[in-house]
Structures are given as C-alpha cells and as structure tokens.
Image (cartoon, rainbow, N blue to C red):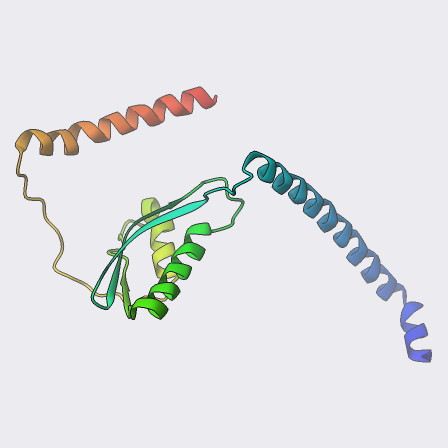
Length: 165
C-alpha cells in the first residue's frame, strides 16, 4: 500500500493520469457524436442501410469476385472487405470453395492503389497470366465504348466538381 501511495504522490504519474483523463474525455465526446450519428441512421433507415455489395460467381471449387462496391461515406468501416470475407467463409463452409479469384491487380498504383490494396489484403498468391485483349464484334460499339464513354465520364466528373463548389 505504501508503494501505491508513493506512486500517487509522484508528480510525473499525476501528470500522466491527467493526460489519460483528458484523452478519455475527448474519446467520450467523439463516441457520443458517433452514437447520435448512428441514431440518425437508424431513424432514416429503420430496416438497415446497405453499405456494400458484391457479385461473386462460383464454379466447381473456385469463386470469382466479379464486382464489388461500398458507399463512400462509411466512416472507415471498410464494409466491402468485411462482406467479401464473410462471403468467402460462407462459400468455404457451405460449398467447399477453396480458391477465390479477384482477377488482376494493376501496375498503376497511383490510380488503382485502393483496389490493389483491397485485393492484396487477402494475402493472395499472385499468378501471372498471358494478359488480355479486345476482339471487337461491332466496330461502332467498340469505338463508342473506348472513345466516347470515357469522354462522357470525364465530362460528368467535371460537372459534379463544379456543382460541389
């Protein structure tokens, strides 16, 4: 008991405890705000809120992750990773799926770092294949897809940026 009393009389220890108390107060305030935000979500979405989705196809003992997305304002929830992990475990348990193909990763880390990081977060075994190529069946649709669609997306993004200002 004497040692504990000496610790409480130590100015350095008192200062550390006071810092911990202040840090806890800041965290409490942050969590109270988060509770209010979640209450608002519950009122707005009484049946729940879809925050992520994935399109996965299975064949034999392999699953193919074709597409996935999540809302952008998830507060760091990383919902798609949680969803895919759940899907992987469910398929593993129920259907005997033993491998998951997330398709490729890009060498362009600047523009695709997020999706690459997501795919690599599953500790994958990277397998290099010969590559891909386009075989246009309709020249008009091919031209529209490769020339005009990117221009339309670029224009849409510019308009969205202007609207936000």
